Image (tube, rainbow, N blue to C red; front, side, top):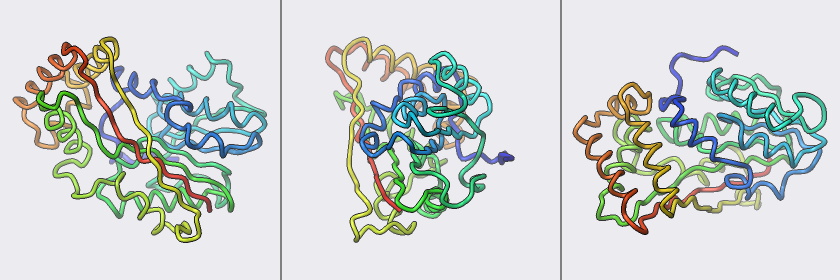
Length: 284
């Protein structure tokens, strides 16, 4: 499948950004889905990045197959390497394969192909809401088999504590501006996912849609230092993540203020971070 040059994903795949993606596993980011996976299932993980969730999902479909899909050929090479290092088979029962594709350009699979479709932190990159996320959700539903389950996980809110360091403005609000390429929508995509699932054709009134929530927490000196390392690297000159901030109209002065606040947060004893994750399950 050809990939559009106008990719919806603007944060890039620097070592700092991919390091963040590699922390995500099936146990940490798809725990709400795991009880619904059968060992014979055919699974699609959309926006798989380095594949750390993908390979974890495959362990629960030991007699099925799992496909990881992403926009970037370079991150898919990383995913293939990590899967090989983990001795995940590339074919046969319990296998994982990776493919390049863009859900907004249409998936290269027939209707009713997969038993399970999953995506983590995908919908925050699809703008503007609600139309573009709805188009993606409708396409994901198309390739889902009748009776199959679609699961999504997206950050609905983020907070740094203590809030006196102002990182809710400097990091969270500016990140939202960068993701939306300007002024964020009044209601972010993650907060309207139940409505989007209904509009995509899932039977919400018939009990076929479940909205839930999970959390992501960084606490303790080691995790604070890691998060500061990642954030500082992403905001370095030349990183696509930093460029996405500049493209959204965030000033160099604000970037420097953010870096100083992140450093101070990392050095503050008992400072912590929490994100509320919208976790959706829907059956076709």
